[in-house]
Image (cartoon, rainbow over all chains, first blue to last red; front, side, top):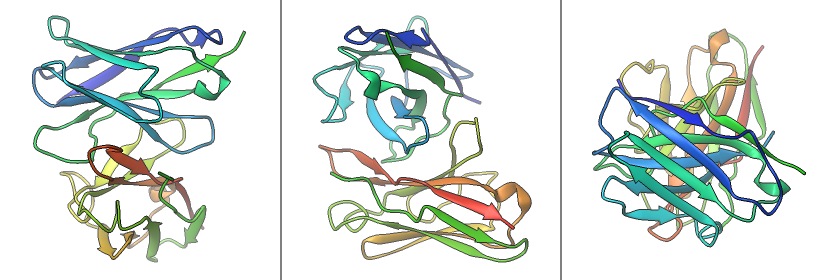
Length: 119
Length: 111
């Protein structure tokens, strides 16, 4: 059973780069698409982007200029970098799997990690 | 593109049925049969409850069902139980450029 776990700093200063890693256990990262989704406090969900194990990526157009998602198959991990952050980027960040051959749904999800943007 | 529209809250008594709507446009919900629903209890990660409009993952009770008509998708929960009290989010594929849109979420209260 695939499990995901996010890790990274919980506090980032405005204008800096947010960096998170998702560790995948119970299955190989060399299958499926691997995604990042965020949820600002008290608000709804927003898809950030995903990566395939080959390195192919797709990003939310509204975040595309600031987002980079990468994969390390040797460590069974994938990562998120979001540059030039503002307070509006404060959110719980989730990593999730989008199974190969499927469209538009995510399962399972990691527990999520709160990232606060503040000076 | 704007998020999908869901009612902010719904409620029902144990044993009753409730339906949560999710309204999009002809570019997302109406265009594709790729609507999914997620249940989120406070402080927990979202859990997939329905995918491809009406399919249930293994382990999800058959009390949960999904449907779609035009630009509106619906999640129906029958035989409400106390543990169903949670936030529910819909999600729809919206084409290769946007990929997916989520709804704003609906808080289900079991009275």
